[in-house]
Image 1: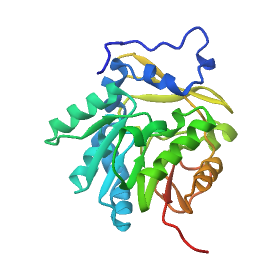
Image 2: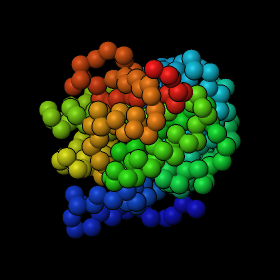
Image 3: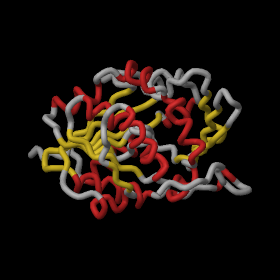
Length: 268
């Protein structure tokens, strides 16, 4: 059940908080209640277009696991596009908000609270596709956690399934500093998102809202090549990486990378 905690707790040394489990303490109710203000569903839908729906349909996917449901944006979009969707998240607060958002739009989302590292224990059956969006994978601070999560995703997919996973362009942030137009992911008006601290092991982001409330998320700054390597080592053979939904791009340009990793075995 969701908690009633309203304030984030990072202790006396916030930049030392580099723990996978801490995300559950970061998504407090007061922050979750503002999440839709941050992403703005209508603007985000317009900016993304049909990229995810088209990518899934091109591969014949029907049963989808939305592994990082958040407040339900992609789950609702996929349901309305005709997919059979299961919505999972590690945060009970997020799932409660997602269910509420779905019901308000006439849908009953099938929600499951699950830690990705034990995904197949909590979520039964196999899927044609898994989507893990919203920069969520970067909540994993330990390499073993990342490998275990990708292995769980791989196992939960049908033999020809596909994983779609996104991440911030941390390469650009680490190498060139932060610059974002917030065009695709954070579309809310008068909401400011910026890194408060960045090093090779931590990207601490600050989220400021018009009512002067401020929240933070601590995430691991994953480099693109590293994520692609982990995917290959787990077993995904063919991986395409898009920059802000485009096939071709300059490495420092995109705000986000989207990895489309196919499980289907190809004999070389």
